[in-house]
Image 1: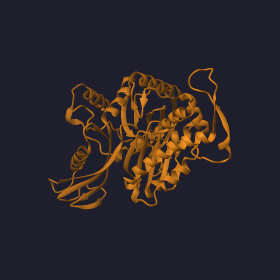
Image 2: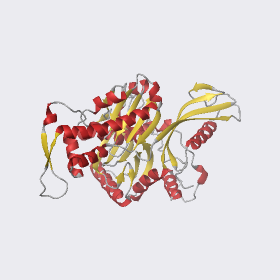
Image 3: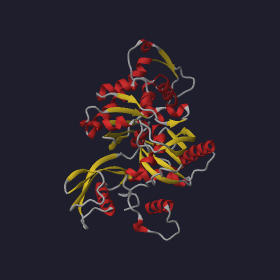
Image 4: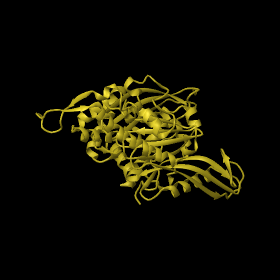
Length: 439
């Protein structure tokens, strides 16, 4: 079994409440790569975002066209590496700092969350921190199938002798101790190759996180998380979903359909090249058919010979092509939500994020298909975001900057079992070793 299989991806240490930290996020998407560098400054919790201990002050960012990525997975190492180097260098230049390690998002590799129960007998009469770690590790490993790796292991609640709802079991007396946890896994190969790209750029992966989870950290208010919400992160190559209930992240899933499929449908449907189809989608893409402009005609350059006459296409034709694919995506979201804890939350709402959520009319279409209140999510509580980074398409890279403040909620596998005596026993030594074991 190689490195990543059934193991946990790197996890960041929680940030100190009293200290300022420098963090960098990298979102390697199918259509764009975004890099953001920020200072996390200790701040009193706000009313709307209680969980945040730090204010995020953006000091550098970049967004460039992605290369070598398909459906959230690396398909060309060299191309992807070049693009990542460029994105990081641009953000570093703006921030006037050098980055050593980054927080990395994962949107490909068939994200899947499951609730796991694990229990064990207590040896010493009362529950110790070691008992908690031991039982949680067992549950986590049990939940991880062959070829999968763990992105998140979040204890949801504890039980003592079958009595659930225990908040902190340490020091309490019991014969048997149990934990309910949410384990989010992805294909180990996808995670490993994303890491490899970053390591080839001489950067350390400080932590990896599921895209829809960090998107939720960026765009959800506390009230929404408490009452129940689903964050649907609509990327170019994949759509991923995170479900929140009772203030906690309780489920994740995803599938490989996204905004790029709309572009390809348009290119095929109107006979345009992909770049022109992308431009048509961005300028005229709507899922609303009907209305006065539906009869408006436009000329579209033909893919192929330069002297071919352009085609004349109605706006209604374009809207129909876009709507069909958008409907398919939301129907798949609806099926995924029906299989998650979200189905049991009648007051829960849906928050859309990601670039593909910005097509005109998506909120109305999603409201109709999902039969829930829907809104577009934008990054919340960030000081001085540039205008282009205030949109839904930056939910993931901004959410990664918030993520270290929530790292303490996660179970982290103890890695002391395989010490290499190489003077690199620090955190980054562990990450590097973890990678070496994986290859």
